[in-house]
Length: 112
Length: 113
Image (cartoon, rainbow over all chains, first blue to last red; front, top):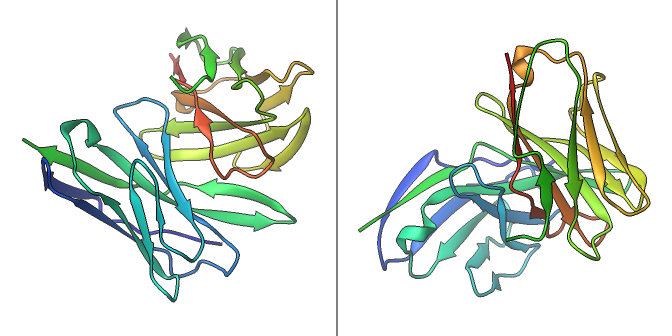
């Protein structure tokens, strides 16, 4: 089971890169790391996921350490609209089924 | 807009009552997931259905049940409601049985008085 640990809050200046760390030291070899964010009480929004290699999409980059015990989500140019709670999610794998395990997340505040 | 719809948006009911929350997944998605988000518990996975069949179960109470219908919409039934059931209930959907990329609905806010 991949339990994740994240700092409870972070601030970032607008226009700068926001680097959000996540520890998932119990992750097993075939378990992905997922990132979602939640703005206010809206439904969480998928950002990115990865297994071993670094990943990039139009929203963010995901850097996973070689030992897979931690990862960093990078928002390259944070805007005020990126203020949200960011969840690094592990999963439980049981008989071929997967369940997301949301932690408490990191509350990112982007400052003007 | 994720394409996932949930009704109603808000629901206020009394303890002991029963309510039904409804979710319509994105067009083409076969999996539906239900989550509960309360202030003290964070986001908790409840249950997943894939193409009409229960696929995975999380921390769902026995007083709660769900189903997915042939048209793929899903309903979450909550009975014998308690004050502690007050929460945001989210539905999410994905194409595949694995929750690699889930699309969440706007949620139903349930208040039990």
